[in-house]
Image 1 (cartoon, rainbow, N blue to C red):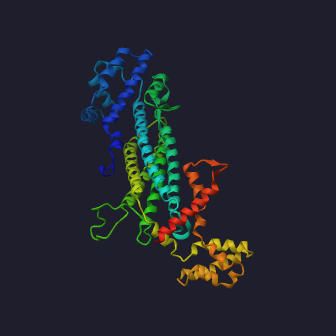
Image 2: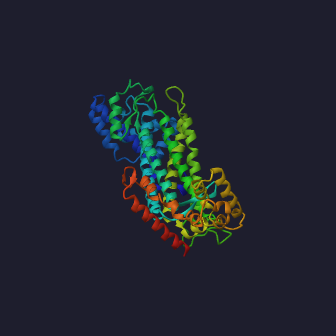
Image 3: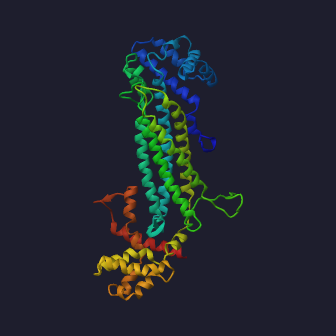
Length: 464
């Protein structure tokens, strides 16, 4: 991944020096296990650790050797021999390249997961704070991009919070799935290396053993990992797209923070563009794109081939680095997001009360009208409002057929915005874990009253 979208901690996982350090630790732990089993001299294992534990591997030298031998693991082992000396002949006893490379890859992916989990925690924290801040900030809900019924901006953010909680759970499962160690020798039979060596290395490296590794760790594990990253990226794009829509000039209910001195356009000085959200959208496309080659890596020839290797050398650093950067950017965006409750209220009222059409229809059915007649009466009064010919409440009140069922006072009651907010507390309790009693929030009556009172206060402020 290019430096523009790279954060240092994640990049460090994929640097050659880190990779060679992990490879050394795997080889050295395997030597320790073999020494305990009497396969190699104990002093040899001790010498390997003593001479290699603080070594700085010469990446240029390893590359030079690889250009000659055309084999990356042999190049590393040759350089390690130069560092360790005669005892190096006891390294890599009965092991294959895949034993160390796949186990190293597992360690790297596990470390990357830890960073991504921390990123998700930061995003969840920002979403939770802003959700509670705007728990009762009324706004219009949209379906098909068209005004539907009211909700709150806090509920929008609560939905995102719940989605990223699911993302975190999936990533934890993916972390467990890729955190396996395979040191089973040629074609995975353990004929040349004792299974206890694998178990020892797995424990030391914080991994579990691979039940059947053929000669490699099965790539369905990695396919699930990259698919999980792709789903997380898709959730990020969904939230980023919401923000982009809300920042449109015709909507302008929220926008990205615009810092002093920032410029939005080289040509038009007035522009304030949702560039962070658009950047997140683009990075999400990249991360999703890496899922398909990971899935194609699953089908390898017999017990192994290396068609997966070149793919993973590209997609693993790029996918984790890009997602790390995008998650950090999204958390910062939410933390600083500018929210405009007055504009939300203005937009909510833009359709002249049409957002209450369902309430009127249901009220008519409860007073004796058939559903078909109720729908017809409501739609008959709604369509002129779409054309800018009056407001919904006035037209309904003037409709004699509607008034056969509903009084003027009853019609007005159906236009109370707080009706739509009465279960906000219940939804927040589900999302954020407020204690429940018999499936309902405790002190529900008091909460409902408080919600209604607070909603009215917020709406009065918005009108001012």
